[in-house]
Length: 147
Image (cartoon, rainbow, N blue to C red; front, side):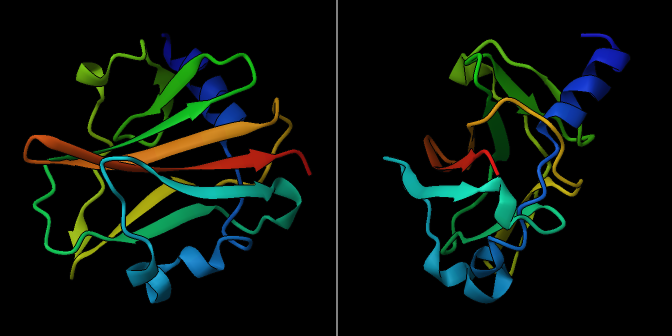
């Protein structure tokens, strides 16, 4: 994917949802614990958005071996968040999950999925985020619906 295509993909996935996810911030991180079965955080409306989508989770002492964020748009073509903050096409193979570069601090791992305002995009969008710990992968997901 060329740099200009990555920027287009980054704009297409740039959601502003922090306002609706205020409860998912650092203050409430102990309430969100990812699992190997996946944690469903439900559905939210993009109209409840704020300045970006950030989800903080309690890693409960897990050693983080890498983090990832995947977005599935209406066309079901997965995009993966790179460590530079841009989105790229992903082939869907779990072995090819790239490290998004998020780090835990005091057992809190914050996924900064987007810090841009909501733009026109094909809804719904499913964001899957997680981390590797040893031989396991722990993850969660949230669906964002049209405003």
